[in-house]
Image (tube, rainbow, N blue to C red; front, top):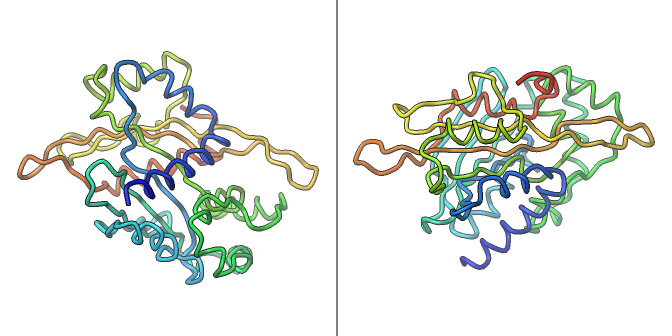
Length: 270
């Protein structure tokens, strides 16, 4: 089972770094006396039944993962769950889905068409989780979605793949806190997501998070090229809560701001 998990996450990582070259630079920067441990990954989808959250989570549940938390992001029209594995070293998985009915008829039609391009056979294969886009691109279509939802626009461009990996700061022997990690990143020229502050969360809620802004990747829209935000890298520091064990969940207010790491409008900030 552990080998199957490792194989899946290696495939997810290989796909992720293909459009997030900065991730390898982060490893070079932080991996000195410590091996980088992945705290969690995140995936995105639509709440259309044929491609909804349960369709993605089944791949992880078949490997022993169990649902461990539910989250609602009202302003972004998102719902989400996170999944944990009984094996302590296995990364957590955070899956969100966009509430399609919250949007205009043109946007809903685009998203319905996206879902229709994915067959049940494709969905059943583990490689679906890193299969990318299953539809052709049109820049006007992208702008239609972008006007209503950064999340929908991102999914239209990049399809099904990990949105971010996360460095577990708890496992970085050379850093005492998240502020030190952030400063190291900034000194090396990385731009951080400052929505809600560089550090989201606190010791009191059991989790502190920060993230880079997404890489900028040139995308071909049938011969018309545009630079679009791809994926980012997150950093998480978990603190003891309750009985003294480390907090294992997610904080909705913080995650809400982490989502903005891929916002096109955020790329001129930070």
